[in-house]
Image 1 (tube, one colour):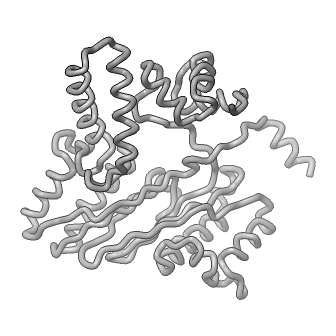
Image 2: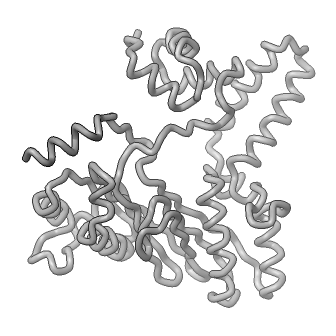
Image 3: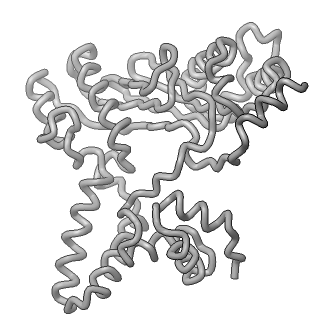
Length: 309
């Protein structure tokens, strides 16, 4: 059995918002498995369904680049937000996004690319050079790309600090024979929706069966704890799963801009207006620091340490 440390309890609290003692009990019940503990808390009504928010845990920037039918996005992390405001750092991330476009979003290929103006250095070597130049640890953490044969890849950057750079970057790929400029207008709106709603999957067919089974188990256990008979439990679970799909699937979500139509209906109507069917081919959403734990420190002590160097 894994040791139930204070750090583990703290991490579970941040993910669920549940109380400390409830988190500790959940971890004891699940032998320290944090995902299992989240589900245990949810069955007890002590954690928000399908929400594992957690705090953004790393500084730096996400950046994107598009070129008609293709796009790419990267995440470059730094130790402090000061560096994210550094012009040299911003220029580097912007260049990395453009190079990621050339590498189809493949991280290994990106790291091997020659960095423009880098005196023959590869991207990986240039990151090391930046660490020495700026004086702070950095990491090219991830990269992804998306494309369509015909149509557009639209983009949106939330909390933008410079063109194509910010805290959340989204790419949406729309496959269609419609006018690219008009198609890009709706694509950008959907990208804005993705930034706000954070769907897990583009379409129902893409849902991982394991995700559904996990949710089914949680819903079933919650219904049992309410003392419901089996026939009622089955109906409650199926109703809960339908609601869950509407929460996690982009095409099933209600468009945040009009608050009425689903994304599927928006695409259907736009396709009719433009005279060509529109298919949502996929999306990519990068949020700075998601999934990374960050050590909390004393800000005043950090500044003092820098001044004493």
